[in-house]
Length: 171
Image (cartoon, rainbow, N blue to C red):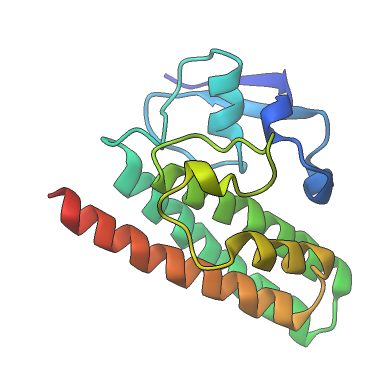
C-alpha cells in the first residue's frame, strides 16, 4: 500500500547550497523502495512515518544501486544540457545529482542523510570518497559547469567502488 503525504522539509535536510527543494516535500508511505524525489525517505523518517528505510542493511544494496542507476540517467541529461549550453538545465541536473550522491553516501554508511553539520559529516562516515566535502563545495559553487559535472560523476564512481567492496566484505 502506498500513501502520499506532503510534509514540511525537515531541518536535517536543509542546506543553503541545495535551496531548490523548498519548504515542503512529498513522501510515500510505502512497503517497497521507490525513489520519486531525493530525500523523500529521510523526510518520512524524520516525521515518524512508516516507509522503507534505504539505509537499513536489508534494503541498502538494492536502494543504493537504484539511486546510482538514477544518476546514470541524470548524467545523460547533464551531458546534453552542457553540450547545448543550457546553463539552467545543467544547474538543475547537477544539484539533483548532488542530492542523489548524498543519499548514496549516507545510505552506504548505514544512516539517513543529515545535513545539520554540513553536507558531509565525515566524522560519522567511514565510507567516503577522498576530499568529498571540498569536491561537493566546488561542484555547488559552480553547478553549471562541465568540471562540476565531471567531479560529481567521479564522486559517484568512487563511492560505487567503495560500496561494492563493503558489500563483498559483508557476505
